[in-house]
Image 1 (cartoon, rainbow, N blue to C red):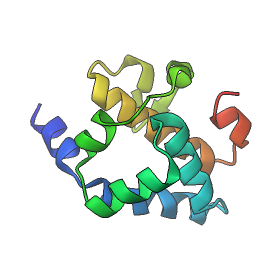
Image 2: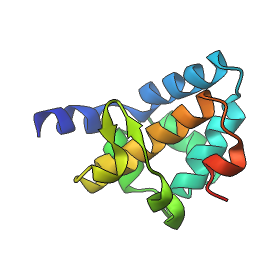
Image 3: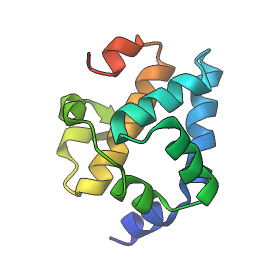
Image 4: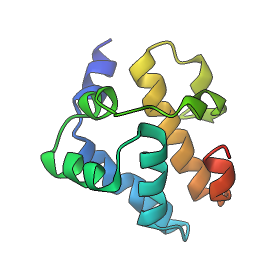
Length: 117
């Protein structure tokens, strides 16, 4: 549980640039990263910017998400060697969903498929 505490204590504003860098390194955009985050969490773009600026921790960012997308349960696969659908802890599963979507973006998957449309 100590590892979970450490992950959840990280500032989302510290994690976010890594998502953007991963996407941009593969020719994708910050706007696409933002669209994915907003789709998954229900944050509006202005709310997302506000949360990043507020330097809240990952646990608060995920826990206070306005409305987690009901199609998030369709996200399957492995991220960091772990099947996202098998992650027991609900907050960690939601974070892994986000990690998986950013991975899919970086791998060149179409936005319609990433957003499970």
